[in-house]
Amino acid sequence: MSVLSAEAVGEAHRESFWRRHLHVFLLAPGVAWMVLFLIVPLIMMVYVSFWTQTTFAINSTLTTKSWSTFFASETYYGALVRTLRLWLTVLALTFIAGYPTALFIGQFVRNKTFQTVLLVTCVIPFWTSFLIRVLAWRPMLGKEGAINIVLEKLGLISGPIEVLLFTELSVIIGMVQIYVVFMVGPIAFMLARIDDSLLEAARDLGASPMTIFRKIIFPLSLPGVVVGAIFVSVMVLGEFATASALSGRKVNLLGNIIVTQVGSLKWAFAAVVGVVLTAVMAVVITGLLRLVNLQKEL
Image (tube, rainbow, N blue to C red; front, side, top):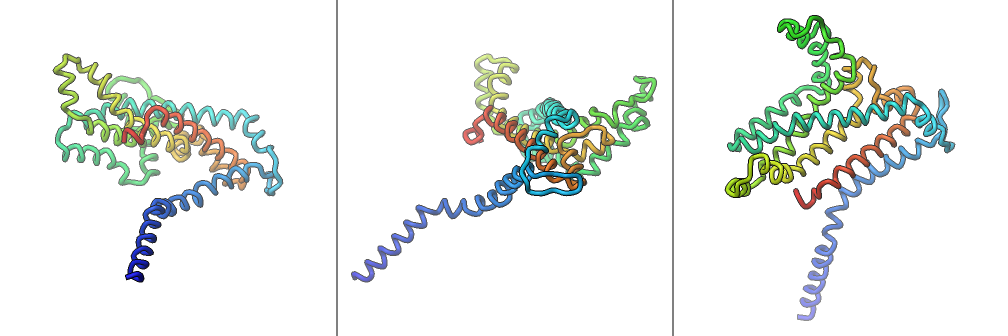
């Protein structure tokens, strides 16, 4: 009996140990992945940004010359400002275009199957290559493109509108079309979760449709707005392909500078721009997360 008791105690002790440390074993793979493929690369990027860069070589002697060059140059500082300006513009336009669509899908379409069909329809463009979707705007926006032809046929313009292509406007149009679905999805998800009885109670109490939207619908959909804004922000801030393809390389964003510097083997300066871009993203995401407690709301 004593041997059996000792074995039972040992088994219970081992089971208790596994239960106490189960969360550690469950977290270990994710933590290891984040450390190896996020934290370590970020540390290396910061470290390389202080290396000494010459025209044809780079060495590990630490210096702040690349940082000084970035902030002292009007070209690179202008790219930072332009990146932020386009980000704010695209973010605002994706919200303006995406929220009504999400409101229709989440509140006015009551059939769940039809809701799914509409959401799938929104992502149909993603069945094709990203680059093809970007380049498809060229024949649409050009001086002899579809938009100008239609406007001329309707008599709305007397000559082609030249600012539609190879300008910041064309980049904004392309980005909004590509990324608006990332705003629609999370908002539609949150709107579909709103209890109908809550809206019915508000109507019974005499609340107008605008009051219901302002006091109930929009606040409850705000977590979806924040999630959508994070998706759009991360992708727009890191953009380079859309700007290159639709601006004729006339609009340089931080992402374009990184690609150019890496192509020129200027690793130190590319690392500087990467650190700046990462810091901007961190500030933007932190600011958005302060609007809503996503852990509580989701």
